Length: 318
Length: 158
Image 1: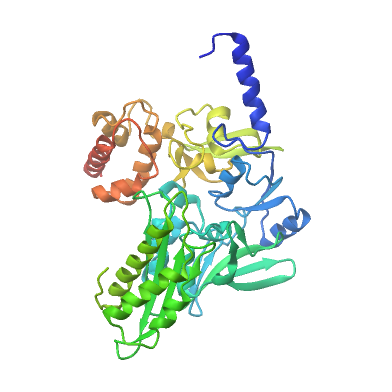
Image 2: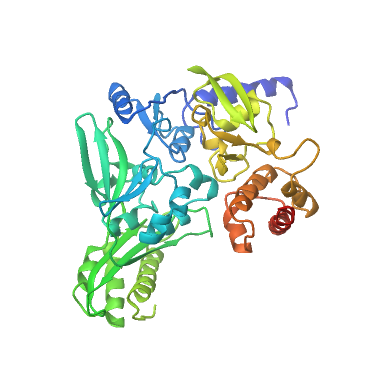
């Protein structure tokens, strides 16, 4: 490979140079220089974030932020790790609400009996996310804070009416999932705030998440469709329809026109097909590296028909 | 920024003065000479760096070493008992599941995590559990057979 020692020295110099300059994408992935704090309480963590408003980021599972740092997309000087804080890692059901702590990993969610029984769509989406080693470390909270439109955790939380508890120096606030992600890579957290738990109200009806991905496992969603359906007392009319779409807009979104078109009406195959078509228009699909807009629209339509047929018991054909 | 960090690896305690920005994969290899954990994509896709932390498979390239303290780490070096191979290692060797060997430590540890939880997995469950470990040599069939053989061996032992 190296014909001359001088060539080798120049290669070494180039490598060392790259480790300290920005944009090392495609080459050796060293992290930038960072100091890691491991506070023991949420309060301490918030104080640390407030002390370094421009330069500090929160670390939980690390599966998103480590890559961003390796590629120099994010170059914080300080990381405030949540991993030494007691708590933040539990899943509880109390006062008719599900609480998922910020540090709860996908693997814990998949295996959790409360979620399997009462909120299977959350376990379904978690099981479809990434691959086993990523699921052991990555957190649901990190997924939504990373704020990409394709986040698998988001559509289920949208249809379930999930909220995020946010803690900052001035106290805490609760943000509905719809308002949490602002645009790609930006969530509503201020620099000195930490999202401590996801809260989901008591489950009503049945819900399902479908993910279109290129590979069988370990891939990002080209299209994600979550649907929740609650029938009225007569069993034939739709009382509640919620549709959450991922990867088909700048943020995960609810297909509100589609929802409104079915609520209060008797479910028929024709209505299902109409609602599926409306969901296509609620999205703003684009062509990108993973799929074309046209394909995404068609996938939305087919997924909607499949989900609604299954959840309502009325068979419509795609 | 460096600190003395202490790790529980394969049932033993390891300590060193380590920079905050080192990943667990780097530390296992560069500080402690445990070279069985391989570094592939460094991005958490290929699984060559898979180790077990508290029994769960984890991409060590995405773990900051500083946060891996106080947890039970198992690397490939921790599986064999002296010269006696673990049944999973034997099954891989006997099934032709090892060609270049680069993916193998990660594959074996993912297999251990699977079989510890699910002693009799179906082929689909095996594929799902190993989906975070890529192999460029074998085409995966021999690996799936190795997992099935290992499952049988482990069931006979217990």
